[in-house]
Image 1 (cartoon, helix red, strand yellow):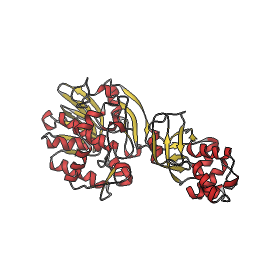
Image 2: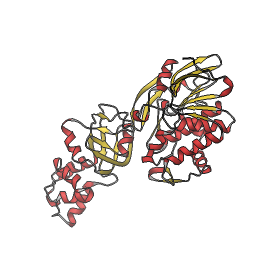
Image 3: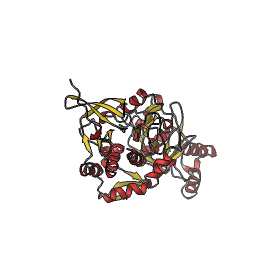
Image 4: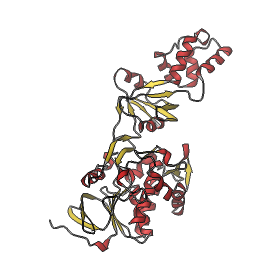
Length: 404
């Protein structure tokens, strides 16, 4: 089949990927009078935007800074985040009709609670600014040629080769395959000899197997506010017990810092001292059973599950000093050694990716491949749960657009 070659003058850049980074890049390029083509393999753009935050889209976080991002170069994202700030994100969306409301820990959601509104901002802007979006367009290859790049695609049963002087890889990471996620960005990076830092699921539930699994399984559905930590960091949010292990915000957060074979630790009663609470309650009501007391702090089901480890059949008055020490150790230092994680199917984002050593921190252009840019999730910059990864995507899309 004869390939159709689009001339250089048709587009200033081809953007591969119609997610948060790609859409922002196209819109910002349009503001600068540049014409781009967004190639999206799915039937519509913004697939992960639409499912984020349970379909509500926590589109930024009020507290976003470089401290909430994981990368082998912890300073790399500072330039990008300073060029497009949280205030810029808020103002941008307000300009196009999206007012934000703050929820837990600085997460900002549209007042409408509808992620479609976020996607509609970009599809509307691309239409107004004459930025083209082609869906059902699967990119098969990227080839560097004189003065630019040939991008071969399959679309509507046809093979086409498109040319542009610049190309943006904003094709996302490996989560969630059923939403169309692929390793395309990583494959192109390897093709051009770029270093890739080890990738793994991040912001992902953790699994428990073997003899400990039934204990977690019986608690499926129970949610508890905790402090979860390891040797690197700690988070205070809810954990959720599941039939296969642990999930919930605190677990998703710590998962980005966890490696197979390592332990994590859980304080089941943060900011309080269970020993002091028991001694105080014992003075007032020594006949109260430990089970009844724990059921007042947690769900009855969780209190009963603790009977495997604690003397819940005793009343408070009969608890020995050793008993109270054991209770304190279990409640404030509950140790867990996960077997693994739930993989890319359940992960929010990918950790690792194209090494920041390969990119200009100011422009996100590939140092050794002039005219090629990398942004969004396929770069080794991974944010915490709660809107941080969107802030990186918007910011990287903005920064790339300035150089097109």
